[in-house]
Image 1 (cartoon, rainbow, N blue to C red):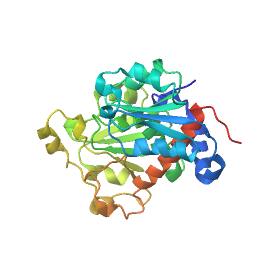
Image 2 (cartoon, helix red, strand yellow; image 1 turned 180 degrees about the vertical axis):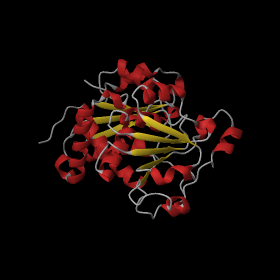
Image 3 (cartoon, rainbow, N blue to C red; image 1 turned 120 degrees about the vertical axis):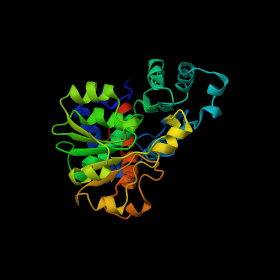
Amino acid sequence: MRHLMSPLDLTVGELEELLDLAQDIEADPGKYAHACDGKKLATLFYEPSTRTRLSHEAAMLNLGGSVLGFSSADSSSASKGESVSDTIRTVSCYADICAMRHPKEGAPMVACQHSSIPVINAGDGGHQHPTQTLTDLLTIRSLKGRLNHLTIGLCGDLKFGRTVHSLINALVRYEGIRFILISPEELRLPEYIRHDVLDRNSVEYEEVVRLEDAMPNLDILYMTRVQKERFFNEEDYVRMKDFYILDKAKMKLAPEDMYVLHPLPRVNEISVEVDSDPRAAYFRQVQYGVYVRMALILTLLDIHID
């Protein structure tokens, strides 16, 4: 039995197999329509979510399975003080696989240590978001045709953004990856990621404050929102939330084959006028998220379709 706590739980070879499977699902979804008949996915979401929860549920339903679970801690026995370990022991009696989102870093890891079914980390605090990373990798590979020799611009909240942290960890394993880290001083990438991940793997990167300075050099621009829920006071959030706004004027500075990704939800960091630009790929990214989660469920349940 395997769990997914981090993108690094998959070797590069296993990751390529997973992305190949996701692309086969995209090409012929009908072939997989009954792959999980009789199987149940539990979605244990202690934090609000739209895309991550619904895409896991859509993935299981597309595979012929069924879903159960809760969408907030208040609607579960966590509100009565039940521990994560007791919850997962209970849910293991009901379901065949579980996706968990929790505001506390490491909570899904605690769950997998007490679970008798595969556990998917669907986001834990500011730590990891591996299924979003799988979605990002599939999107980049589908749009650019490769996952190596790319310049990736990461813009916005690089301090608390778990999607950014997971994506960096995954991409440093590929040859020729270069990062441009675009953030205000207060939201810079944490020092431990710069030193323990980027420096240790000899990955080229530069840190800039102005988005305009980075735009002409990018293959991918990965925008993030400033997350109100990660700030300790309202004043700091209000000061930071509008620091970057991607609009048509800034898009004119970018190469014709650069794509814009965003894990969503967006607030106002991408103007709606950008949505009509063919390089705006964030809603295509949402669709890729369903395919990659279908592939992940099949992989963790060890279900194979010829």
